[in-house]
Image (cartoon, rainbow, N blue to C red):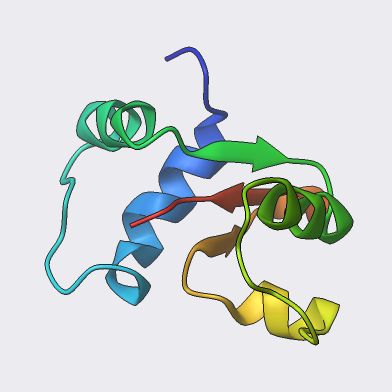
Amino acid sequence: MGEYSKEAIEVFLEQQGKLFRENVAETPEEAEWFLEDCFAVEVGSIREVRRYFEENGMDIDGMSLEELKEADEVFALPGGRYLIVEG
């Protein structure tokens, strides 16, 4: 496994249902391939999540950091990091 941490892949596998109606991956390898295909991004803080959304033209005006944490595209990782997956 390369681009994504083991934790990111595991969290995505466990929580993919919050973003997709049906599982898009069943194994860690499939999860990593999927994350690569949709250009998912791992960031170090919720403030970096905000910056990512702003830089990519997403309408997040008025959203608090707590609301960003709850967004379907945002997966909380151990140690305060986040995985952003655009569905």
